[in-house]
Length: 438
Image 1 (cartoon, rainbow, N blue to C red):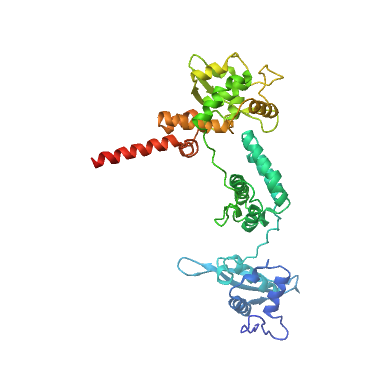
Image 2: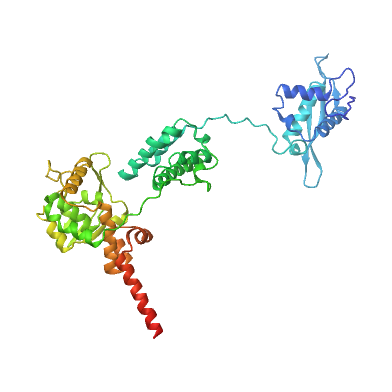
């Protein structure tokens, strides 16, 4: 019989002629014969005691073949589980030597349902995933842009995004791993651009949020540094656009006749319809429906990159029909039958929308001819919204004619309080108070 001392889990004291079980286990682990399992044992003492006991009880039988004695066979029965009634389920294990039998006893136990008695549930060593460096912000953003944005954005929106990346974001973080950009870095980035409009910084921050959100979904970063509530916008507040007063509007309307026909059409369309600049440039004669006395707005032109590119309107609500005011009809004459309404001085065919250069030349020509009182196409849009509200007292009517998708935006941005309206409101309040006194 073999005699082992299991009082110490790190070193067993065998007889001088025997290798200790601890050394045996250590050797198996070093040679990965147990596939690293020994490292996760939560009760090494129990396992060693079990093996020692089985070795003590092992039967040693000589093997005879052809009358010659060969290597002895060592065998033992190992409990590998239990039946429903609690009786043990055993399996016979054989080994060519004591060490071979010990090896097979351990392997049999660890392969059985009794494994959990000796090995921690999640202790099996795992191979660490290789460390993969995060892509740079530029590399990730370009891939994100190609996959999710190209072909899905209006030209104006796409141009704005590309400009923010090229001018602001890439020069700062283009070569920085995307997982190395923190909320503190973003705030420092915004602080360094406090000379820009708050609207510009807000749009840049929103772009960064989209990029980092995508990186989160891809498992590259754990959180979005651009979404922190600590971030503040140090940009300059934009001055609200003011609607023209009636005197300025009347002065411009009275001088339209001094402009060239093409310039007069553009300015009259801006004044009487509130159409966006791109919508006017994209307007075709076929869209002017004399029978219905309406202008059908169906497209918009982007002139930010030289040659105009015609596409959809800014929003779905931009598809609309605008009634034609009587005075506008006069300023549209002489009318064409097809092609773009606004044309250039060198090419009046109307086959192509005017370019950015032609548009800017037209505006300069208009400003040299008449006093615009600081008005732009967008100021005329605000002015018309205010006039329509004064005439109808209905924000939904303003929203419909201007092609706004959001009621609140129309109310906050395009319905401007004018002095006459405020005076009238206060007079009505005064009259109500006077009646209550009587």
